[in-house]
Length: 162
View 1 (cartoon, one colour):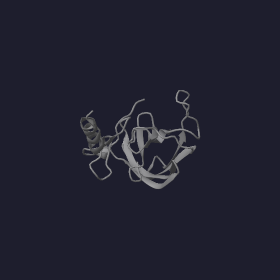
View 2: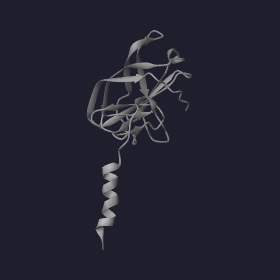
View 3: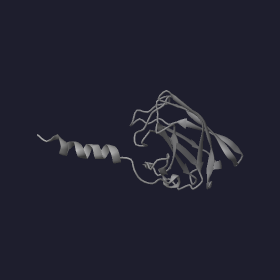
């Protein structure tokens, strides 16, 4: 038996599984060392911590909705959290809004409930027609790690339809 031919492809996958260039404004995500994560839903990724977690922001300015998905470090697997909502402060007022509260979304198919979900959403008519949105996530706790004042910038919004 020759273990070398079997090990070489596995080692190659480990060494080269996360390479490439990034672009935060096209659903890709940069965390400083030639590493690409593609936003599953085509939104804007925001990294949390050192390769620990990711948020994917989806703004549908036609419907006036904003959604946020929570992912693990490679932006591939959903991570459910216990928070009932996510609170965001906005850098610039949007139709009088200075903050938004996205509520936990339940899903009978996946079994997600308030207190155990990976998706948060808000619908607000002030978001209709918005071309950009930026601000901070006040606080989010994921798998025992708390992230506070997390900046996000949706300056090049793509239309997202669900």
